[in-house]
Amino acid sequence: MNKPALRPGAGAEGNASATAATTATAAVVEDVDVRKMVRAWVERFVGHAPCAGDVGSVGTYLVRCVETDVGAERAVGVMRWWGALLRRRWAVWEHADERDEEPEPGEDVRAEMVGMAWWRAYREIGNEMNEVVRKRFGGSLKFR
Image (cartoon, rainbow, N blue to C red; front, side, top):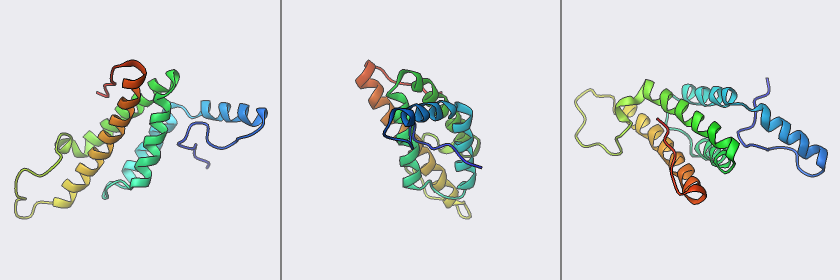
C-alpha cells in the first residue's frame, strides 16, 4: 500500500501536467490520512524518543501547510490530533521540560524521558508553525 508523502506537492516537478498531477495528489492527502500517519508514527515508536529526521519531516510538512491559507486548518487539525495522542500516553509530562526531583526507587525513568521527548518535539513544531503565523498575520495558533 502506498502511503502519501508528508511533504505537500512532493514528487513531480517540471512540465504543466506533472504540476497538475502533483496538485491533485497533494489534495488527496487529507486530514484523515495525515492523522493516520501521525498515529502510526507515535504507536510504532511509543517506547522511544522521536527520531530527529521524523520530527523534521513532520515539521516541514506542517510548516508548509501553515504557509497556505487552506493548509493552515489542516495543520492545526493534525497538531490537535497529535496532542490528543500524546496526552493519552504521556499527559503527565505535557508541561514538563526537566526533572524537578529525583526519581523514586523503581520509577521508570525511561518512560518519563520518552514522554518528555515527544512533548518537546510537539512544542518545537508548534513554535515553528507559530513563527510563520506571526510573520503572516501577527498572531499565533492554539492547538488545544
